[in-house]
Image (cartoon, rainbow, N blue to C red):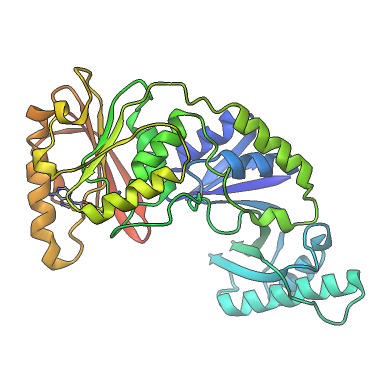
Length: 375
Ligand SMILES: C[S@@+](CC[C@H](N)C(=O)[O-])C[C@H]1O[C@@H](n2cnc3c(N)ncnc32)[C@H](O)[C@@H]1O
């Protein structure tokens, strides 16, 4: 079966490597999509383990869809009843069209819904669908007059790990935070410090990564309501994941922020991971941070952070000033690597230090860049 891991733009290579590392067969990739092959177990594995992906789709089929008749026929020819249960609410939640004659998203959505409902009513001997229970999302991508129809196996996007109930302003998504750690080359033997840690997402993702904790262990998934789901298989896979967690490694992960309120949120989020590990959180302004204050000892480590971007005009001077202040890290954190995710185009000029890695990414709707600098 063809499967797709959706991911934010710029993370395709990381997601692809993660899929490969799960022992799954990777196919091609496109912007925000990594194609791979596998059976039901691959769906479970990918949802449980992928740190950088957004969701996992199971492709039911592709077919010509140059007009509405073809779209209807192609959709009704797919074996929806093998996937969808009458105990869920079936919604065509996403349609994208690219270089195709059918361009109206609501019209495509309506036609696909009609076709799926007709097939299911025929197979189930019903006049209308009950449309009760949790939502099962369907997706249709039209490209060059061909449609690809898929079932969403994830539900709420994968970045919803379940540990972050409290957030400050502009929290980074969990999968993007995980991506920064992977891009940076950080490993658990190195100190890690986020001097603008907000609600602690980068720190929490570092803990999951350091101890090999599957990010999907503590949440529910849409696949639990699909026909092929067998609760026992899912339990076994999660138990295997749990068995591989190793919290005996010594880690030095710390964060600070000038806002006491968000630090409290960070503490609660980290506590929700229920790990018997102390993460140092300091109430500190970034300008006061020094390697010896954050318990790093003499070892050089990684400063990875997501500062305020100054997107609103009034906030820009603060964001620029913070970028200038980061220049002093070369004195206060000598030998460390600094990784910064920002949309501030003047960041390189403000910090005045050369980045040896620059990656174009997106943070929600915003184009951002990840800079990595050797201090
Ligand atoms: C974009 S948020 C970080 C969000 C964080 N990555 C998360 O996931 O919640 C930026 C953080 O920088 C903090 N901050 C701004 N200026 C600061 C300064 N001079 N010193 C320390 N923290 C500061 C804010 O309080 C805010 O929590």
